[in-house]
Length: 421
Ligand code: SF4
Ligand code: ZN
Image (cartoon, protein in one colour):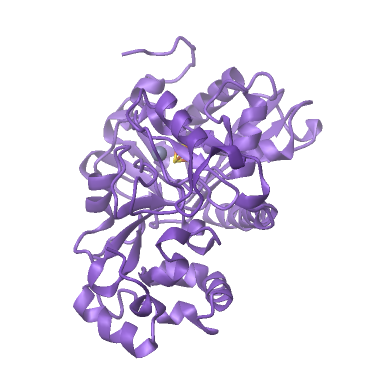
């Protein structure tokens, strides 16, 4: 095991070697977020005078005042000042929370933004670990890996419910602002897509291609973020790949020779061709941190979506975790694919497979989150004003037989499309 040499005064070991460890419920001391309590994380650029370099603060109870087995609210706020720092870099550093948090032995982190989820193990608790220690780890790795752009950095953990609510409000406005900047960018209007291979530490054959209309499957790396990542670190995980006309192999499926070559070069020849716009033929690889998993429901001639948050069964007879175990190791699995939530309402949502009109089932929570955008996209595609309500959810049924009569009654567009397989 390669343990990094940086020296931090904390009672647990740390480094990329601990990234892969999971913490089962039975081994858990406390947890945060994951749908069990409010949580979010935010990296924020601030003026020099608003940040004290190296300050780590816990607002509310720390781990030593927590009760075993419980879920506590958690807000993670990282304030950054740097002469060369730009607002565009915020989401890039924010994604690193996931990695540096996981570097701690006996601490675990999943997800991003306000969909994050973290655990501290009983073993780490026995060693005396606190949130303050985790803050020290985050601080040290940020300062080490982003020395070129970060002059001052401060970490705040909030476990006080009302503080977390306040941060959530601010963070959601920020997330919205970032998403809005992307809204007017189109795949057809740019000359490059970007790779992201950050997840190769978990899934060595995995590579995301990030385009303006398709954010990475973790939901945390947009095309603008990938571009910023490349600007910060020109030899890093995000590399531009030209997609101009001379590289096009199949414009419908979204196959480019340049993407194929890049995939092969960056996966040791394991993934040699990839189609951006279909899940039926050499789809993009899926790693374990996807927000959603799509699967074909042949009986309905459509596609279902489930989310990490949805624990229940789905019309393909598998839960999210079963599906993730099947497709999430960095493989290409035709008929299944991991995606980010917002990709579902992208104009480039699997156009070669029929696009958004194929969506026949999703968890109600996801449908409510995306309702306005689903309806807007449905209208553009000519499915009337209320496409969201044509899509079945767990309250309608969780098998193809249960949802088919509903789709028929609503006149769902998938039923009239060409056979998917
Ligand atoms: Fe990058 Fe994809 Fe991993 Fe997100 S899921 S961090 S885009 S490799
Ligand atoms: Zn991943």
